[in-house]
Image 1 (cartoon, rainbow, N blue to C red):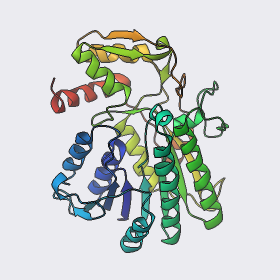
Image 2: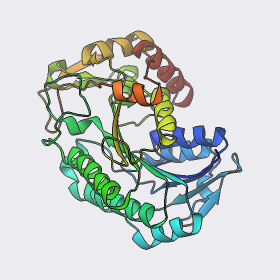
Image 3: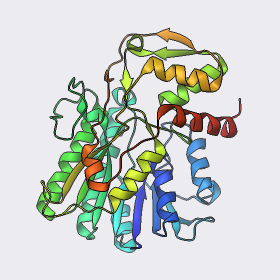
Image 4: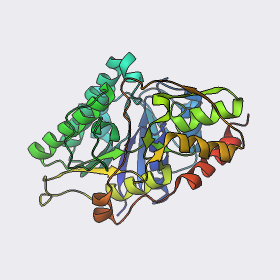
Length: 341
């Protein structure tokens, strides 16, 4: 079934890929992003250029036609712009919405709390209200593995209690899940929250460990290693994430679900990697040793992430499977081509 889908965050890492996959499947897509300067906007504009959206054509609040995909249009807009969001939904009549726009970054939330409330809370209520009033068939939205906090029970299951976030970013993601549940309950709005686990790959965010570490290794600069390297992450390759998102968009929760019209799912690789092993994999692929600087644990960080993906596998018949060595190889090959040093 061909649908009209709003994908928010399409200048961002995951949204960029999701929009392309939907377009390749024949759907009509409207992309939305505010192109903020949380990290270098040149990367965001480069992603947009890859999808046929030229930087010099972008005007705030105006839809731009892609030169590459006939069924793709893009609008630069803040989710917090309530009236403009309402107009967009009323005019476009979306079948489904995939909300991947958010103020990202755990550490940044400690220094800039208001940015997270505006984008992740105010912006999200606008999404919910627009979906409710425009009879959207399914809202899929990005949550995060950070909601599990310092849980020592592994792997992390969707049935675990997640009442103790240790960063404002995590608190906003937990709030999104609660808000979505309320709308699913009150208005029978089908919603699915996806708890992503440390996504990496080509076109990735420059504030994340793969990009930061690779850059430092290549340039011979020291890498900041927190908690003296005693951390593990469930690194999940972007292709696996996108495959999961696309399948979930097509799987609408209904009245018969355990929580009617409401679903939360983990998407992770289920193979946590020690930080020092991750660095070693990067060293091998780059062909150069890293210079390490050891630091204590940073506020807001967690010791480990580890996804239980059995619910995802049962519902959509899919489990992420790209191993770290393969994923890092693809990432480094892209980096050499896109950012030659």
